[in-house]
Image (tube, rainbow, N blue to C red; front, side, top):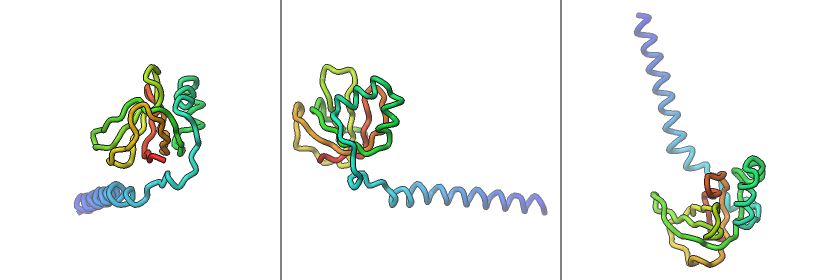
Amino acid sequence: MRKMTKLIYAIAVVAITALGGYYYVFVYSKNHHRNVQAEKGLVIQADSLSAAYQANEKNANVLYLNKAVEVSGTIVSIDKNQEGKITIILGRSDSFSNVSVTLISTTPISQKIGETITIKGVCTGALSDVIITEGVVQ
């Protein structure tokens, strides 16, 4: 009898955990997104943001990581990622590190390579480039 009770409790715990995970992934996270466009963004040039991360990544993370930033710069390339979202590289074509921005929308932008653009999004740190997500053209 005790084995059966323990088994029922174990199944109940697994079921509750699974339901909680399902709720968080498919319901809560879709309805509780951060509205970056409503936040006041830190205004910075793409070259300055890249230079800050190259000079001292730890200090740059304190200033910019997970914060809304409004980045202006010259478009080096425009592409699409696996989800079909527009990705833009801002900076200089001869630079080692630039700013990579992924836009929220899949709609093509009107600006072309070589033009200046301002995009607001969330800074998520740096790999070889500084990464900005949830971008919207200003």
